Structures are given as C-alpha cells and as structure tokens.
Length: 458
Image (cartoon, one colour):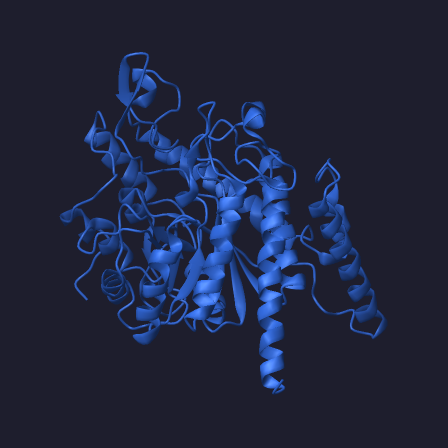
C-alpha cells in the first residue's frame, strides 16, 4: 500500500481551513504536536476493534455519543462527569433491558471541528468566516475571533488530554461500579416523568440481581470498571497527521491515529479520491463513514473497499444519517448490497443530522419524534434486510438543555431559548437520551425474544 501519514496532502482536502494568517505558524504548531505524547495507544485501539468485531457479529451493541462540538469556555470537570453519568445510564438501559453488552464510545476528548454548509455568515449586513469549532476559530462574531488560529490546536490537545485523564479515572476508579448505580441518580432528572420512573425500576432490578449474585458466592464478579473509548470526526488532517504514530510496542508495526480510539469521516468529506479517505485508509483505527442520501450503494461499496480492503472485522462502522422522511428510500438498497457483497461492517444510526429544522422562533432544533422515528425505521430496515442494527450515534449532553423539542419532558418551541447552550448543533438532554435508550432496548429485547422462539422451533 502506497501510503504515508502525509499522503493526504496531495489530495483534495474539503472543509480544512486554508486561510490561516501564517502557514509557518501552523507548521510550527503541527511540529510541536508531533512530539507530544499520544492521547491513546495502539493496544487500546486494538481492544476497541475486538469489541467492535463482536458488534459486527451481532453479539454486542455500539453506543456512541457526546457533544456536537466541544468548547474551550465551557470545559469543566463537572460537565464531563455529568456527561459520563448519563452515558453510563444509557449503557445500563441497553445492557440490562436490551440484553446486549454495550461498547461505549464517546464523542469526546477531541470533537472540536465541524464542517459548515457555508464558509461565511452574515449578521446585520456584516459578513465574516463561519465559526468552525474552537480548535479553529472563535464563536464571537468579530473579525479577530473568526480568523483561524493554530494555537487553538494546542489548546484542543491539552483539553483532550485532561478530559481523557478524567474519563479514565471515572471508568476504572470505581465511579462506574454497578453496586453504586443509585448514586448516579443524584440531581438526575428533577421532573417526575415516565423515563425517570422506568430508570429507577431498572436500578432496583439491577440491585436485586447483584444481591442474588453475591448470595450465591459470586462476589468476585467485577462490576466496578468499564471500558470507555473516545472518537471524533477526522476533519483537521494536519492535527491527525501530527498525532499519527507507528506502533513499536504492540507488535503490529502499523500506523495509528493516537488522537482517539476511533475516527469517522463525515458525509461532506467522504469523496473516494479525497484527502480524508486517503488518510483514514492508512491507519489501523476503527473508522466510521457517515452515509447520507447522496450516497449510492455502489459508491458505498467502493468506499468500503478503499478503507477496509482486507474486510477486517471490527474495522468499519457505517453510520446512516438520512432523516426520518428519507431513510426508507435509501437505506434498504445500501444494506442489501453491502450484505450481498459479504462485507464485515457495523450498521449504526445517526438520527440527528438528517432531522434538523428551524423553529418558528428562529432556533435550529431537532424534533424528538423524528429522531425516534428514524431510529425505529433504521432498526426495522436493517433487520428486514438480514443484517444486524448494531449501533446508535448521538449528539447528546448530560446537561439539562432545551435544544431538541419534544420527548417525555415536552420541550416546546417556547422553551428553546431558556437553556439553548450549544455552540453548533442541538443536542439531546439527559431525559431525551434515556428515553431513546429505552426505545432501542425494547427493540433489542423483541429481537432477542424472536431469536429464542425460533431456536426453540416455536
């Protein structure tokens, strides 16, 4: 394979800023990053691939989610903890109620940059470059803030390292212990609604199960640690190249992107001969590909062959993002062709990006019923085509925001301004995230029941 960490530079690179005031300053920052310690290591990445291989075989379920874009100004330990707590709660719902081991992959510790539909925006007659994420430029609408600043890449690296340090401590230091599951409910959902009621019932059942296990002399069963992995969109390829390392310890001898355990390629940057595919085809990390309405089944097969030519299990996640009104017209053909070609992939649903609307009061939002509808359709379609609907990819937060309308807590358009805090796209709040997890768990439980009945000849 003719590939190197910088071979992408000879390709067409979309949505990477080319208007840095000083290219020399950018190169100096990238050189500094190339000497920084990796944020993740090869053995962790290979561990994730093994877990994802189980998802591909239908034995586990992939939960991937987090902020649409991380922020420098809002970075604090409590926000990370709140996010991790809701993520754990969703995983518990999927594991216990859905009967599947859950592979936990956060959109965190590196998810800063965002491709934008327009390179500029105009407010009150003033046109400036669009905000593209805190690792590129600033949210404030002024000329100085909107200039790309390479120093932001160093700040993003440092914040990612701090976030990773805290997440590792939470995942392995006892916070994730199922024996303390009721402690996760502190300041959880202040409103009394069906989601909270269902979750508290689930906690009670889990506590009873743990008591039963302990009474049988199985107290040595580990419940106090979880494996938690990170991911982000591979957008700024200069940053990714600087953090690419050739493995000298794990034994594979290949190249790894050490900025995160998993990377994905966006729907706007998946050109077969473009820079983002070129970079991602050469690293050994698991790779996601966002699949939207403009992608055909044949084009998808070509992408699969380019990124995963050896058909490695656990390597490739296909993330469907169509919209609830389009998924039925596009997804069946894709699943049919990929399945017929014998490709080892994971089918995951991104029900967020295709369901964005503008409310009557001018806020970008996502109706929860459309999000839920796309998830349900996704699972039914993939299952009907003889494949396994193995994952969910969400923009979500542990904060009590009002950015997506609907759900059990009934966020209305009038409530949107009250806690609309996102820097980019609207996110599900804690209650909405859990409500969606229960819906998915119900689907998984039904599928498991059907498999048991079929095995019994019923």
